[in-house]
Amino acid sequence: MLPALWGLFLFLGLWRYSLSMPENTPGKIWFYNGKEVILEAVICNEPDIRNNHTKYEVCAESVEFSREKIKVLEKILVTTNLYPAYRYGDLLEIKCELEAPEKFEDFSYDRYLARFNIYSSCFYPQIKFLASNNGNYFYEKIFKLKNRFHDAINFGLPEPTASLAGPLILGYKKGVSPYWQEKFSQTGLSHILAISGMNISILAALVMSLLLGTGFSRQKSFLASSIFLVAYVIMVGAPASAMRAGLMGFLVLWAINLGRLNKLTNSLVLSATILLLINPKLLRDDVGFQLSFLAVLGMIYFPPIFERAMANFSNFKNWPKILKYIFQVLNLTLAAQIFTLPIIAYNFSQISLIAPISNLLVLWVILPLTIIVFFAMILGAIFPFAVQIFFFPAFLLLKYMMLMVDWTARVPYAYVSVEHIWAGWMVAYYLIVGYIVVMFRLRLKKELNKN
Image 1 (cartoon, helix red, strand yellow):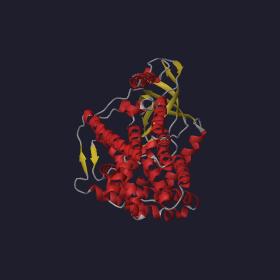
Image 2: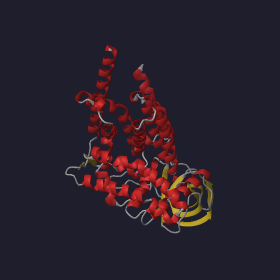
Image 3: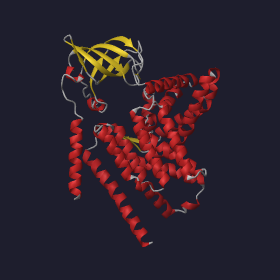
Image 4: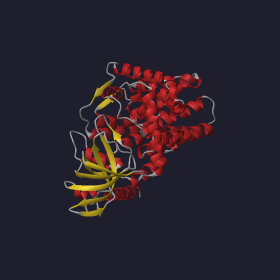
């Protein structure tokens, strides 16, 4: 019976994935790849501003080709100059030659864009502004608020602390210099420079663990942490990636609230199934989804193993609260690292050996830094003459974080480079990890039956 069910699920999964593949018909914008067209399109996502250019994700409403105007409803990635600058919701007339995204070097850029249902792009087109306020009202207000927050950060903090506070708090990763991106990668801290499920899951777990450790009841800690999680997702602009990450973070909070992490697997699988039904490309092409799912899975199954090992070798129950909190941080981060290690190595060709230590030294900063920056942005908007004073505590925390990242990156053998990983080794790794989890659960079940 079970093999038949697995076969049915495999068939349904392949069928759903096939439905997501693009159809090459005149009603689809990618039908005109390789041709010069005139588009009417609305900027339907937050502009991605780089050092010397800007990328706009636009939703086409019509395409004009050979003097024939056809209605279409598809996305296009437009790369153009920094100025003139356009905003979310602007309606534009765009004249360009559409191109199909292509793979370059070892990066599957076409698959990366396909997960957003983008199969066409154009570079440095002729653009004519037509109208504004054509986007979603809620998102428009959120993006305006987010931009004001970002301006406050840039005014209240000097570089490079401002560039690091942007992605930590608001998800603005593009301003981080290559030097610091490399340092964060070497120390296994890249996840805090992006709004990911792995980042938010760890942050949510730390918030609730901290509240529980300070004497709050489990129910109150769960409620306060959930409110914090919702506020955080809204603050970063509530994009699809952050909402997905927020869902993963909420699952971790729910698990801690129940007090039985191993009972959350069904909910995690159900959530992943719903997300994949909506967008099946996430499973193969979205590394963020893979890391989010595996990180939460790791925090479900591995902490009890570490806790049992610690209880066998020490009098863990009588430890001081501060040592228990340190152990909880190490426990959660190490569990997430174990389950995400092969995916990180395969996609980024680098394994951080110092990651558990660097996470322990740095992750505690994220919660107070988020709170301080949040209130500093609000107070700075009311009293702009004192904005640098409001941001001074955040400046100290960011300097500490930079110092720790730089120091741990300099530790000998802090990281190792991996040129190529055979997919078979990844399968073997997860089989071994799965075997350890299954054997531990069987042993635990036997002990419970004896009692």
